[in-house]
Length: 392
Image 1 (cartoon, rainbow, N blue to C red):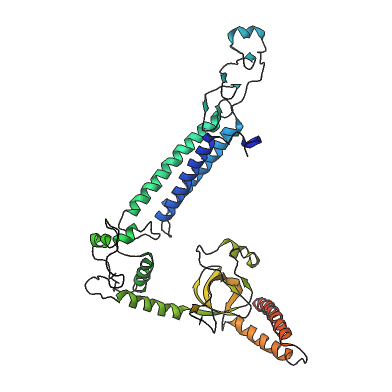
Image 2 (image 1 turned 30 degrees about the horizontal axis):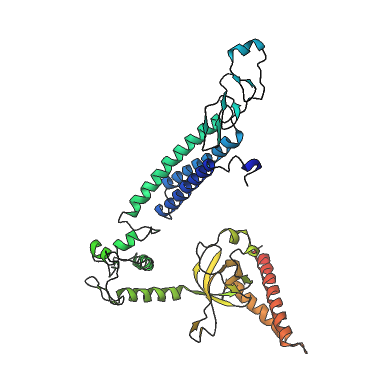
């Protein structure tokens, strides 16, 4: 690596500067994502864009300061008018005269045009050709640090405030409220369920901030209680939260819809074969991507623009005490809702196609299965074409 064009940058100064730039950039982006809510304001958008702009400019001017170079006076340089030599210093290393504003740099081993100084951070001199880049680098770095400071200060104020955050920083607010990360989501959904009424759900385990903190933090770091029975506020009991969970699960089941798979899902995290929109808008989660075959049915409980989350229907859910349920994300184009107009068209076509096929003698079950899949895939394409003609 430390040869050719990389020789100049492979030095402790430029490498340290690059690490600092990247750390500040990544930390600022991380803090800004936690500070701002999903419904971002115009100020948050402007602050983020300004910071990213200054960060990019800092890196751009930094690299140019290194590789543009200060400009070197040629070896054995002599002024055009030899009479002017009397006004110039002679450089014994470069064996030439030093032009006005030029100085010899011991570290670079050359005479530098309009030398300002040798900067260890760019592992080069600041001179005639890179003076502008270096100044712009300093200006954009300072401006970016100011914006970064503003973002980080707002983040710290948000972390130590008592406001609920859409993205919880490391458990500080949750500890003060005596909530776990999962309970935060349960309470958010509980309040959403009651948003059209005057009723408000009360978290049963949050008494006061000092009591709540002592439930987690202590000098000996040992947890109080047995982990099963918990102190609750007045008006609540041990099962207040679990009843709410059951009600939310029931609502979730009512919202769920059955989908039929019409295109094979590979379970890949990079589904290239389902279009650019699917590829460029994956769900930001570490939940599984599931593999599905044509004809499978899935109970879908969550929807995204180009992705669906659901559980594959199966007759054997638990065997030998092991949960065999297949749940995860898959591309939306792979499935259609059961009993939809398109699904009914497919059913009619598929049933007629199977009736004709099974009248053919001397066809093995394996051949029938393979032919069924081919016919199903062909029927999807034919129905899609037919629907387009109807729309026209």
